[in-house]
Amino acid sequence: MSQQMHRVEVLMSTYNAMKFGAAQLSSILAQAGVEVQLRVRDDGSSDGTQQWLDAEAAKGHLVWWQGKNLKPARSFMELLEKADEEVGYYAFADQDDIWLSDKLYAAVARMENDKEVPALYFSRTQPVNEQMEPLAALTFTPRVTFGEALMCHVATGHTMVMNAALRRVVLQYRPDFLPMHDMWVYLVALAVGAKVYYDEKPHVHYRQHSENVLGASESAYARWCRRWTEWREGRQEFSRLAEEVRKGFFEMMPDDERRVLTLFLDAKHRCLSRVQLLCAPEFRSGNRGRNLRFLLTVLTNSF
Image 1 (spheres, rainbow, N blue to C red):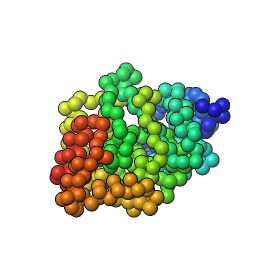
Image 2: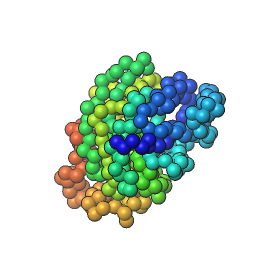
Image 3: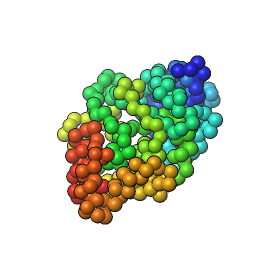
Image 4: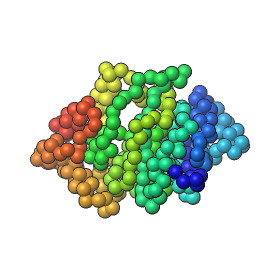
């Protein structure tokens, strides 16, 4: 990478972050090889987080504001909207992880030559317990295709870094339906033909604890039970997201991505299109279990 020190703005949404927030902040401020600035939106904490943020802001470590409780997806998108437009890169950060010191440098190094075109980086993650002891990690390797992104959640937000060009694209349209910010950013990036880089090497210690929304180290049985519940409760989620992509970005999508999106949406209403969808290689994932769930979802027209 060039000798220039690239500026990265880290975007963190906090909610009752007192237990793990200080350790995560330290790991962000310890990033090597890049110039870091931290922007925090508090999503209605009640445990002293706001006083802690005040103290850290007084030290010059961050800027922050308090908002109403929007939940993570909308909170992170508000952060992206209000981010510093003068920096070159933006990274999402959860409040309870630990970043390795090369996390941001590894991302920027991949995208350094893509300043004029939209680009996104994400990586594998290393689950750890509350004592920071390593846990078993999933070994799924994504294909990083638009079709795969339409059928399953691939990229996790705490590993994502995007360049300024992609931020501008993402902010061109505000979706009405937004289950998670990372699903949306990843889907938009692939829809518009952005350069997307996947790093097999983990640069984040993804802390698992009782308050986590999702566990990367859960047992196979627990994972299938959770996914079955998610499937029952979240049916139609992927087609609704796809429709948001169509409304916001269809005109700027490359021809191949338009074709994939059109087939996906047509399959909601036409049996022949569902058959074509099941046979289309563009929708295959790098994980057999995800392919099986996709088969079930299409056969029941529940995507």
